Length: 308
Ligand SMILES: [Zn+2]
Image (cartoon, rainbow, N blue to C red):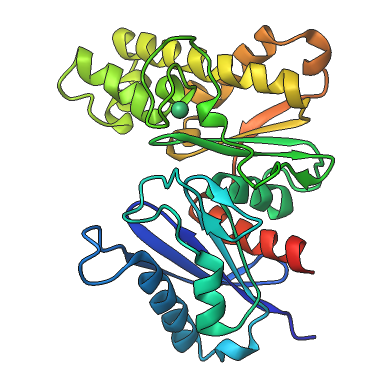
């Protein structure tokens, strides 16, 4: 039997990732193309269309034989209209881009567009760490905090597709200013960048998470204290979300999720201490599995669920 093939696209602040993905979620081939941040030579959508042609050429795949294109992108994504809303994330000239219309005009294939954090949740529930689970909360810790919520097997998208912006849940009323225009948002305290910002205020060489975790793993008391305060913040936000969504699995993704002893275990323990005991009964908290492929695989899953 010949499996259907899709293109999964994951647009980030610095690069476009493209993958040839089959109907079972297996990535058959992938490529990564840098974004022209000045947008002088090429717009982001031109980079996307070029990546699609390139990955098809490399694999000898006829574009017309594909079953569709799924796109994951940062910012507030209007999935109903297939376009980026006003809050465009960290991609140059991105606000308002009509992604589905452009790709449909270029290739004439079914296209879907969804928020990248939501796509990570879909991918992990499809073939990753939350496979087989119907109630999943996925939290991705990076420059910001992204994620997605799957309830009774369905991604919660809300009226327009904006749902799941967990980085902007307010955890400290009147707190730190956020890029969204608000104050006290979860990501200002729980993003990896928040940890690094605090780290740099303490020591010159703590300008990346890797340096901080390196010292913490070596037993440095100050680094351990810094990481401990930061995992408190991560747990506060997730505990609140747990009370709203009652997940059975909470996945933590992003580069820091590789830190099993310093991040996953303490965050899991702290969440369970913070929540109402009934919510903790069958709750599993673990790291996400799919890493760099999650966005493109989840984008394909979004397309399959939306169009088929
Ligand atoms: Zn915010």
